[in-house]
Amino acid sequence: MITETGVRRPSRRLRDLRPRTALELWVVTPVLGWTALYCLKWLGLGALAPDTMAGFYNASAYWVSYRDGFVRRGLPGAVLEAVLGRPPGVFAASVVAVLLVLLVLAALAALTVAAVRATPSPQDRVVVAALVLASPFTLTLAVINRGRYDAIVVACVVAVVLLARRRTVPLLRVLGISLAVVVGVGSLEISLTFLGPLALLAAVRLGRTTAERVGWGALAVLPGLALAAASLVVRPGVGTLLTIMERASAAGIPLSRSEENSISALGQTTRDALVHTAGIAPLTILFCAVVLGGCYALTAGLLWTYLGHVHPRWALALLSLYGFGALALSAVGDDYRRWWGFAFVAMVASLVLLRRDAVIIPAPRHADGPPGRRLLVVALLVSAAMALFPIWPSWDQSGTNASIDQVQQD
Image (cartoon, rainbow, N blue to C red):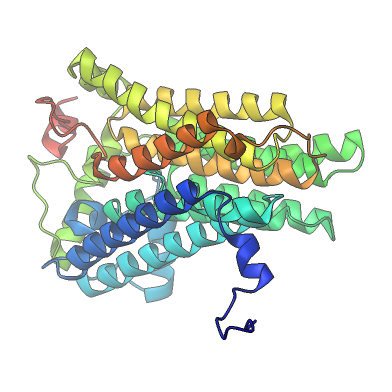
């Protein structure tokens, strides 16, 4: 709209999308800009890498399939072999790595849109988008962790949200949710920790009677639970792992018996993982838990506030459940930031689902008071700074020893 003085005035819709205060605007803009530049840097480094976008460690997982029998995390490799008609080569691995990056970025964009649409006040939507996009558990983690099957898990989380957004043809939607859980677990068995509660919440939401809620909840979760149990019980033998490594090496992936890779790591037992964790400095473990867990709780709590304080008891229960899941995985794997990333993405998805059936509780807007504004500023600035936080505590002297030689000794 143009005023009498000839100055174009922003439309009402655009004005409504602005943050409530100048402080929010001045913080959101640079934080989102920093996040975008950080992502472009890592994507550029990946594109210019001499091997693949994923790196040889992550890319070695693409040769794990069901060709030699059931192996955990073998579902994506089995699908890839079925599409190609043979094991992949380095070029195919590069293409898969790029596709996984595009998949996770698209999934995170869809999750952000869902969270924004679930926000009651238009003036809070930019802030909600910033809290999700600038989180150290979304975009910046995805570009550092590019090429891993984590991208598939995030896409499955978003698929569950999209499938549960309406109640038409509920049985087909529950079957789709069950398939999403199976795909996520078949790619990374530990993802059931986060996909399971989310799928149960989505399936129960679709049911109209108690019998439907119980039956559809079981249908949504039990197939994935069975697959996760099989993944934990069936440990691949050293001979199988060596065969897979030889296949990857023949394709051009340089793997060594004395160095860990995504294939040899499949032979690691829970006992091996706990022994490794015991070798990490206690202060390092405490520091990672406090910093990552604190950022997770602060950001998820703010999102809950902006989405209208939906179902406080359910929100707190899910926040705690996902948080305990991340802590439990931290005990057997030192990729701490990845576990908290799963927890945060699952929590955002859960809040979106809770919001759809909630009656918004009128409450003082946290953005209307100085303490609340300061808390938001702290959350956004911490999120931006934690983009630099490594996936695992690289400063600690301890290191995993899940090479094929070590696995063979065990």
